[in-house]
Length: 118
Image (cartoon, rainbow, N blue to C red; front, side):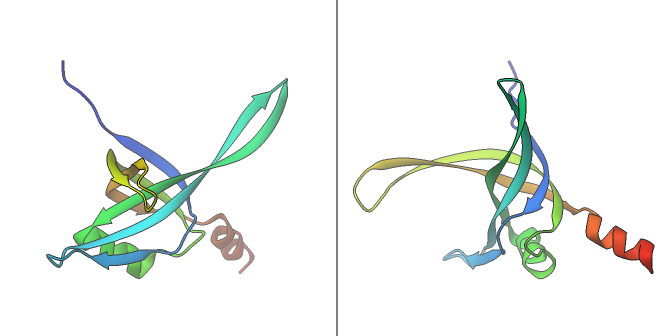
């Protein structure tokens, strides 16, 4: 059976872009995206926010750092990736992040409102 690992998210950039390089000089960017979610509890609709860690590599990483700012609405397409590591107390931890393959900047509601008033 074939498997599928594809993630599509629309949300807002929750952090500034953190651009770094590996020892082999490959660029990567790390950031977090926030997604609004409505949950029904006991018949009452409650709003919540979920945060997802994103990593982009090479040219896409540099574009993120150059053009993306905290609060921007964005569309991300990528894959799930997990890794294990040991924290400073010797406890094994698991890290799950989304490896971005494609990022699109979406129109900001605030910018659309400003354009209508001009």
